[in-house]
Length: 145
Image (cartoon, rainbow, N blue to C red):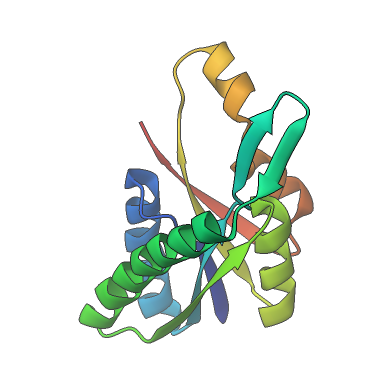
């Protein structure tokens, strides 16, 4: 069954539900759990021509993402599950796929919230949809409304 599970975790409501579902699957299948938090590269906008890398913003965001990840790891530990986690920076789909390949994951778990209206869906895009297209293994999309 599933020996290595990767959970893309952001602490959101869908992420919390994915954590709960992932916990149940891991307990049932005695899987290794890895949590990954993907942080976008922060840019300070300087005009319509583009942006510039902001190291202070990067440090602050990494701290925030690490705290969220640590909270998820503690919730799993409270349920008796050992898990490891890491914060990475970059495109969410690319980083999740890369991590899944590196740890030889059998399952990727992500949370997803249905967005109201076509414009919201178009503007935000769907990490879940893109992930299914590029994943090296099965993907479980945990849906909340």
